Image 1 (cartoon, one colour):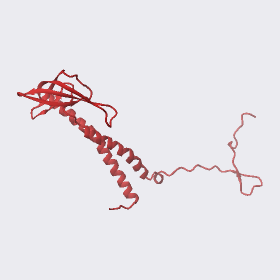
Image 2 (cartoon, helix red, strand yellow):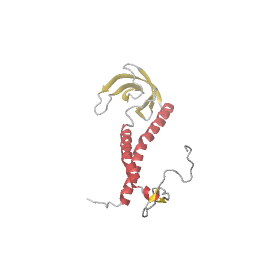
Image 3 (cartoon, one colour):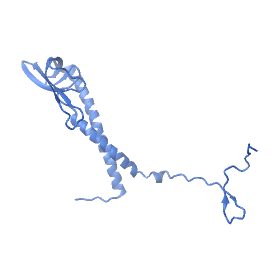
Image 4 (cartoon, one colour):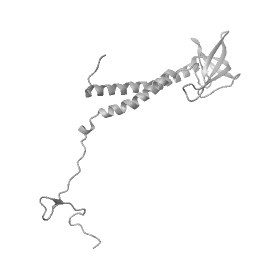
Length: 189
């Protein structure tokens, strides 16, 4: 096993690398969503339009999630062949027997977009999980990196300004501090 010295430079470099890795993982789901949105637009423009029927709808219990997940199963015909594909219920969940307009990718008959802008399959789940891991990494890495920055050296704390005191009568080198400014008028007199 290789052990690295616990010098401040290694710890700072490790903190910077953790922040970069966490940022990249957090960026991935947003990038993937943008790519999927672009693909949805392209499929609507270049895909083969057809109709699909929701022939089944399955809801699985939460498992390690707090809410159940529902999946719709579509059946559609294209070029004389029947295809079946699943679509996750994200924002819209159609009932069994409903007919839905879809646009199918001519190069891949299992790839389509619905009229409610949902792509076939369950896309982006892995990237979403990586995004959560990236967020957790950033929660740890940012305070760690900030703790490595020598703020005290760059911005030394200000020392409170001491006022000169008046020497006390009979005191050997002691000074007295007054709460009131010298020569200030007292309005109560």
